[in-house]
Image (cartoon, rainbow, N blue to C red; front, top):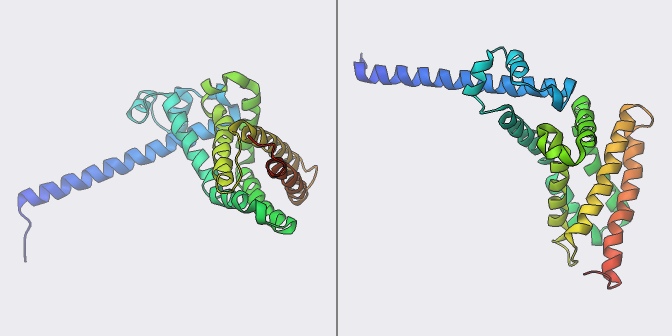
Length: 234
């Protein structure tokens, strides 16, 4: 029977110990992110403190610095994760719908648009309390939202939506000003946010909200192409 040399055994044991430390660190880091998200959902941007986050993760406050340089750094990482998780599943669906818009019949557009809107509603209702908190903090902090960590997620997401819309529109034979797309995105986002919260209050069904949004979006998007067709574009 072959026997490992002491040097090899020591190396293997050291590697195993390192792996265990990495796993433990990853678990604690995840626990801190989860704790911060839970605190934000309940208390909003003003409720996040290093002490509360560390306590929720089951570690002492000084140990927080082993994982994040600051609460702001933690919020930034959490914001990136949330934004990517929210946008990734639907990004290409919206890009392709906008790219195809000039050739779609009304029935085809409404089918595609409703599928895209369903993804947005489903994502919001996966954690509707968090979604509502993000909307509330975005309105509360207004122009100072960029200094409020997770509260800036709504404005950052709308910037990403502008990029998604520009990507889709640039695949057509039409040209658009970014300011016009910003206006379109802001109008669309305001309607979506309002109707998601209305669904939460059970004022109407999700399907009713998606149906009216699809009609509104058709009118909103068509205004771009009508303008271009009549030679009013830039």
